[in-house]
Each structure stands twice: as structure tokens, then as C-alpha cells.
Image 1: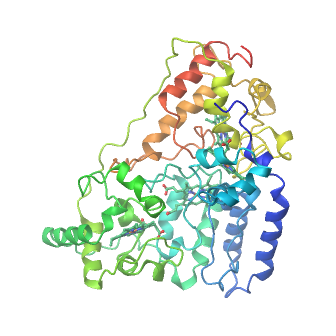
Image 2: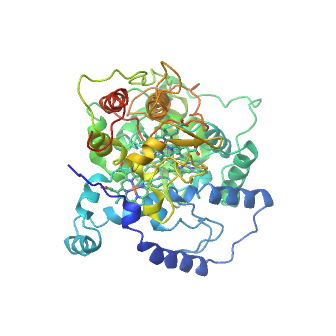
Length: 455
Ligand code: HEC
Ligand code: HEC
Ligand code: HEC
Ligand code: HEC
């Protein structure tokens, strides 16, 4: 048991100065960009900076000289960056000397290596429109959903206006200039003649024998026996970002698709997919399969729970803190005083959210609740008789979102599922819902009057 689980941010604060210098250096070397961005694209970049997209995503300008920023966005300093900080820690795995050095400043370093699993590898947005239709990206910003079944994390709902999202897509498209995919033709254009069943079967065979199913799934039906969740987990980082290819037909025009399959980095220089030596002919066959194979929607995963029955035992603060709040929630609901004033996205704000002054790191903070419309509101007392306290309601909302957001390999997809409500997102934001036992544990603690440390 980790009695006093420490907030990483506070413990790692001395690093701010160092990471800051590194960021400045990147800016100083930035080459002069090839072509000026339009006012709308510049606005899009500003929107992304304000919403802190680069706490999670790289935004690389692939047309800039190597190691230069160009029109891209510099990663947010490591002391605040969900991905580069986690990577920095995990990169010491197996390096006894580095671990010993870090232990001197961070006594809990060994535990960090055990606990951190999320936010260590996410897609680069800079080169996305070299492969993906900007019209898809625009729809995705309205209602993000899980594209990558091996990646636990989900894209967060965005509190942006339609004009701001238009600007973001204009920027992500301009970043790639002429290399960007042309937006899809209007729906009025008659569809190209679909390949016949024989051609699709040939494409399927080419897909299976080219090694593609070792990283990708395509829709709800397993194509290769034995390639289940455990198999993909064993593939590690190589497969982590591989999308479910069922979405290709909404995302990638045929010509781009055929070229990408043959040589991924020729289309998208940041791609992590290996070139597998697929000939042009085979790539064309595979494209027939990906774009035209019949694709059932399948049953979307059902929410595991919509209400939480309390357990028949006592639950104390220590358990609630160690198992849930201190483990997962503090990373966005910190106690600001112990973290240079930054309380995280759900407290003092960030990731495009204003924050609700909700501190989940201390018992006093939990009891104080959140601030809405200038008033303190309890998260542990029912807002009205018979209604769940806001803390429990937020956990249940994440379960309700899960049919859209949490897609194990071969799960179905509900094409009509809307994204989470950006005004009331489920918790934990961007992470899988808590397992039902943990939600019940919290429900029990709440039903018992939310006792504090020492009972
Ligand atoms: C807390 C981390 C986080 C933040 C902040 C974040 N994202 Fe994401 N985003 C994700 C994750 C995780 C995914 C991958 C989801 C998947 O593919 O299953 C993703 C995916 C995406 C995708 C889809 C990529 C693709 O392959 O099509 C787009 C577009 C995107 N994000 C845009 C943005 C923008 C714009 C912002 C800022 C306004 C932003 N994201 C901020 C976590 C984040
Ligand atoms: C300064 C470094 C640093 C930054 C920045 C950082 N983390 Fe972490 N994170 C850690 C450490 C260290 C742990 C392990 C904490 C422990 O074991 O007590 C951790 C653990 C976590 C965990 C629990 C383990 C897991 O993988 O699920 C989550 C969730 C998490 N961080 C989310 C975030 C999010 C979201 C952000 C960005 C808003 C972020 N972190 C930014 C260092 C950091
Ligand atoms: C070693 C793992 C791996 C293998 C094997 C692999 N891919 Fe990929 N693929 C990826 C990753 C990771 C991505 C995510 C995008 C990126 O990083 O370029 C990707 C992206 C794609 C995309 C873009 C999907 C989208 O929605 O954006 C297509 C299409 C694709 N792969 C097809 C194939 C085909 C066809 C094969 C077999 C010839 C194959 N892949 C083999 C890892 C792999
Ligand atoms: C990745 C960041 C992140 C993580 C992790 C996270 N939260 Fe939040 N939380 C937020 C943001 C952002 C908001 C909304 C802030 C706003 O409206 O400005 C929020 C809001 C809330 C609210 C208010 C909901 C309402 O009624 O509107 C509760 C309760 C909450 N979080 C609980 C939790 C719990 C419990 C956990 C852990 C299981 C958790 N959060 C993990 C970012 C996060």
C-alpha cells in the first residue's frame, strides 16, 4: 500500500527551469517557414495553444528543416506535459544507473515506473492531414471517438466553438500545404464502381498474408484466430497507435491509401507504421478490401453499469484515496498550493477547461466541493433527494460514454453515437471508466457519509 501517494507534479517541480530552457532552444532554431499561414490558420494554431493540445499531442511541421519548429507548435514544457514527462520517466526502465540517480531526488521513482501506463504515446497531429481527410478531422473534433482499440486513452471532448474548430482544421491542413489530402468531394458525386466479391476476397487474402493483422483489426470480426487483446498487448508500442481499419473508408482517399500502404513515411513522415514491402498491385488489392468489404456495425460495448449498488462493508477515506482519487484523479485535480499554484485541468483549469476549483488531493478539498456559477457545490451530498452525489454521477457518466470511447479489439461501433458532452464530461476525463467494483466502493463511501481520515 502506498500510504502517502505523492503528486508527481509537485515532486518534479524543480525540473521546470530545465525544461523551459530546452523549449526556448527549440524556438531559437526555428527555420523561417516555407509559406505564410492564412489568418484563419494562424487563429487555429492560437486556439490549439490556448487549449493546450501539445500537453498530449506533438504538432510537427514536417516541411520545416529537421529539429526546427516551422509552423508547428512546440511541446508544452515537460513539467506540464502528460506525454513527455511520462516518457521521460519510463525511458529510465532497465537503466539501473539512471534510476539510482533519479531516486536521490525522487525516492518513489521505482513506483512511478510501475504505475505509469497511460499518456505515453499519442498521435502526432501535425502530419495527420497528409493521410486523413480534413473533413473527417472536423467531424472528429465535434464528436471524438476511439479510433485505436489498443490505446486505453480517449480523445477528450473539446469546449470550442464551431468557428474555433474550423480554424483548427484550417491550420492542420495548411501545415501540410500541397501534401494535405484534398477534402472529400461533395456527396453528390456518384461513387466509384465497387470491386466485386472476388476482388474483395483477393484483397482480404493480401491483407492477411502481408502481416497487417499483427497490429490492426478491421471491424468486429477477428480475421486471425488467437489475435486477441493479449496478443496486441504483447506487440507493445508498435501496435499501440494502430487504428481500427474499419474507419479507413471515412478517413483516407484511395490514392493516398494505396501509397501509404506501400511506404507509410513517404505519405506521413511521422508515421510509426513499418514499410512492409507491399507491391503497388497488392496495395491496390488491400485497398479494395479496406474500402469495400462488407462491414457490420456490430454491437457497441454496453456500459458496464448505469447505477452503483453500495457494498455490504465499511469503506474509509484511505481506501478511496489510495485506490481512486490519489491514483488517478489527482493528476488533474491537485491541491494548488503544493504544486506551484497549478491545480490541474479540473481545478485551476487547463486542456481547454476553465476548471471548477475541485481539489481531490486532500479530504478538505473533497469536502469543499466545486465552484459552479460562483457558488460552492458539494460533490459528496446528493444534489436532490434520490439523486447521486456529483462525484458518483461523474463516474457513471464515463460509463455511459464508454460505448463510444472504449473499444476493445473487434468490438462494434455505433456510428450514431455522439461524443461526450463537453459541458459535463464523464470522469476520469480521457481515461477508461473505473471498474464497476471501484465505482461501487466510492458509492459505498458516499452512502456512509463520506468519512474522513481516521473515520
Ligand atoms: C489529455 C490528452 C489529450 C489532449 C489535451 C488532446 N488530445 Fe487529441 N487525442 C487524445 C487521444 C488519447 C487520442 C487518440 C484517440 C484514439 O485514436 O483512439 C486523440 C486523438 C485526436 C485526434 C484524432 C487523430 C486521428 O488519428 O485522426 C485529433 C484530430 C485530436 N486528437 C485533436 C486534438 C486537438 C485539436 C486538441 C486540442 C484542442 C487535442 N486533441 C487535445 C488525447 C488528447
Ligand atoms: C512532471 C511529470 C508528470 C507530468 C507533467 C504528468 N504526469 Fe502523470 N504521472 C507522473 C508520475 C510520476 C506518475 C506516477 C505517480 C505515482 O506513482 O504516484 C503519474 C501517473 C499518472 C496517472 C496514473 C497512472 C496511469 O498511467 O494511469 C495518470 C492517469 C496520469 N499520470 C495522468 C496525467 C495527465 C492527464 C497529465 C497531463 C495533464 C499528466 N499525468 C502529467 C508524472 C507526470
Ligand atoms: C507493426 C505494426 C503495424 C503493422 C504490421 C501494420 N501497421 Fe498499419 N499502422 C500502424 C500504426 C502504428 C499506424 C498509425 C499511424 C501511424 O503511426 O502512421 C498505422 C496506420 C495504418 C493506416 C492508416 C489508418 C488510419 O485510419 O489512419 C492504414 C490504412 C494501415 N495502417 C494499413 C496497414 C496495412 C494494409 C498493413 C499490412 C500491409 C499494416 N497497416 C501493417 C502499425 C502497423
Ligand atoms: C485528464 C484530466 C482529468 C482527470 C484524470 C480527472 N478529471 Fe475530473 N475534471 C476534469 C475537468 C477538465 C473537469 C471539468 C472542468 C470544467 O468544467 O471546467 C472535471 C470535472 C470533474 C467533476 C465535476 C463534474 C460536474 O458535475 O460537472 C468531478 C466530480 C470530477 N471531475 C471528478 C473526477 C474524479 C473522481 C476523477 C478520477 C476518477 C477525475 N475527475 C479525473 C479533468 C480531469
